[in-house]
Image 1 (cartoon, protein in one colour):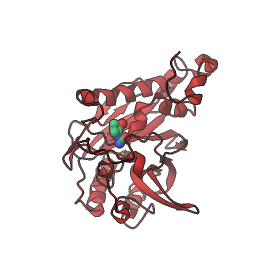
Image 2 (tube, helix red, strand yellow):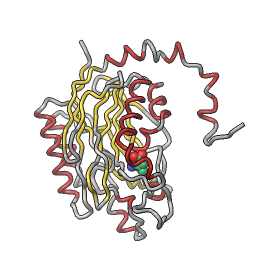
Image 3 (cartoon, helix red, strand yellow):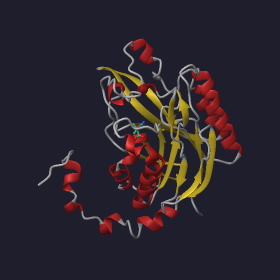
Image 4 (cartoon, helix red, strand yellow):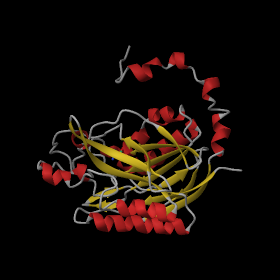
Length: 309
Ligand code: CDV
């Protein structure tokens, strides 16, 4: 029996600052109901899918900042997503800002969760590669303060779910080959990944015209080189005067895009994903046990920056 997972990549159009959580949740529920009608098993939402992309602003007032975070999951406003998952028998991946109270104080993460068809959380991921800066930089057209507003996560885990092995990543993680390989080494068969990517890259505006190309390039390479499905989902369009790329897609272990969104609004891209397709790559070209040469890779985990001879 092939192991088929029907995936809905649930792209969101822009979320403006004035949009209430309730309005946003309605949009997510709408995606869930449509995906269920089309026989999907899992819906994948973007990074920070409950709010506008707030790291574009330098916010000094802690109370104002806290409004963008969830201190419980599910909480009163997000509970309907979990209820819908259970009612529809539909799993989901959701990105959000997490305010986590621990014994040593509050911790803030750029988080994603994987929720099962029973409405229960299967796994949680904290974004490892936080891009941007941690102080106000007036020369930028808009800020990118993820390094100020979040702590970095510490691992790329995978979970047994939906008949296969699932992993999670968030936005900038997709640009780093290490992200995919660490999960590849745990046998990952499907990586779910939400993103918010402005078209304009303030430190390197010469990349702006290539932003969609780079988006697909890194995810397609990561899929092929690790024999895994990759589902990349955008929050797209003009958000608070900042243009964000679309490019939501579902990528097979061959590296081919098998489904994609064509707008920058709320849109579903759907694919019937056979997890057994991974084996053709994992057991041949990318048979890690047979072909990896770990004696030559030491620098990867021991050295961060470049040291020239
Ligand atoms: N949310 C992100 O991680 N965005 C980055 C931008 C800043 C380049 C990205 O890698 O898409």
